[in-house]
Length: 474
Image 1: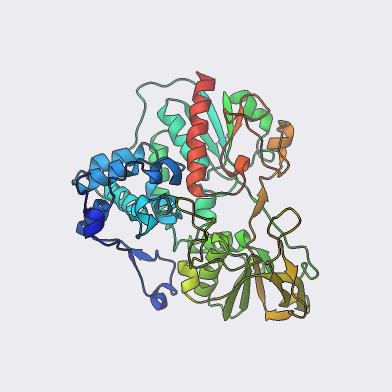
Image 2: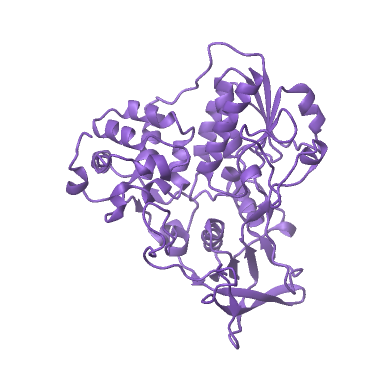
């Protein structure tokens, strides 16, 4: 490494965030870039650790982190970006929304703050765009082979780019009106400005990827149409069926799935007019978000920007510890208490809570009856289990309830049924070691085959599936 003692000389520096009172007035991104001289120092903290667990264990994309850190520290930004692009199609996106598994596995994080890998990745990519280094990459020859990709989320976009650069003719079919899937409609603009996504989609278009929006397979075109006209079909339609909460009062007005709320707001931010009768608004309401993950956090930030009276987030699971437990050692992902930027903006968080009943007035939800849980006794198989604490019931005011409890599986529509594609016990598409489904020539990648997961995992699956599709076609 260029600076073997850098981790002893420089402290970790986090990007600053805009003040809460300012950012709650808009949907602009929160974080402010670190200065270029400071990023050089941060790259110098990447120690000569021998075994780079950040690359080998932490990152499913297998980003070559020590190498691009070293190159950046030496001032060779362009070469560092080339190394990063070898494994990651969209570092400006993962640099914004990835939970940074690499940093949790950083050797330095055994007893010190980890290297700021995520921020380095982001600023490498942004400098590449600013300085004109990121350009369309077209193949020297075309193969004459055609590939259809169903779904334009991170897995579909990554696969499309890889296949186009290999010389195949790629068409991406998206049922929504805009390209991006989860990146477009599932993530708020204050975390991922959609201009960032549009910039990369523009590159794909210049690489001859064709996008067909507002086109649903099974409604607008058939699965048989794709099978006849394309040499391979890749399903990257995501895990879109949300987990419901079938308790008394579920039918009341004002209870919505988180993605319906987030998608509508993203459309509003994009300039779309939302009909009054179908509008989901938190303005002036007591909001309860059920579910403690990233989607729930996005609901909090969005509700606060819409002018919610109050926001409470409830979680079935117990409150995580402040530090790693003994059975959760480095370099595993630390199961610890985290506070997102949205949670910092103002909400009450409750753990070990079960929702028992929605209560309403004149057909609209007005409160939730809840009970506290005890997680101290495992079940007969030694697995974590809960019991309700006697006489612990309480009520939360709620004129808007957002269900953010995760997703069950991919939508089982005509694309799957007409192709007789096999799914597993959890409802996900079954694939072999080549990402091929039970239907020859039809592949699947991303959340459609893995279940709901991280964006970097979807990108990784998309890249690997593209490699196997290329082998199949050629």
